[in-house]
Length: 129
Image (cartoon, rainbow, N blue to C red; front, side, top):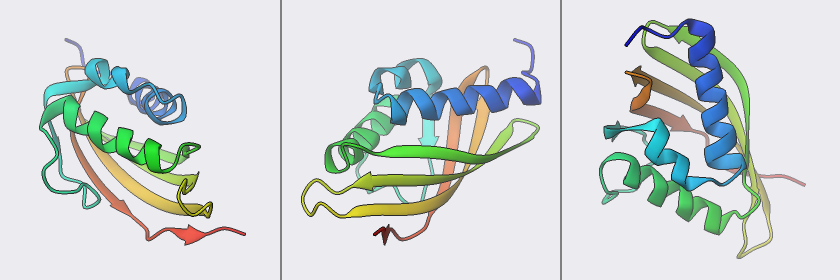
């Protein structure tokens, strides 16, 4: 398979966030993530299943707690097979009604057109007024 261009990688990642988080389509994980996907994010709770299923469980849980969760991609930088994303997350905690906002940096490694690895660093959520 030919290496994707930087612009193709940027669009793939933007589309991934839009579909997986903003449109709440958890099934897209089976398309976008490699079967042996490894999540190295500091935000991931212990005990998540491996591969795409872990991403579905993690994001699915977040969408239950924050049903209106939305991510805005601010920057995308591509270097080789790595895609770095700076984004902002917003959502309302269904239990408290508080509107929260936090930023994050995610580094994806893309292999054969699939998300193969993820490293993420997220800010502590701040309450929005």
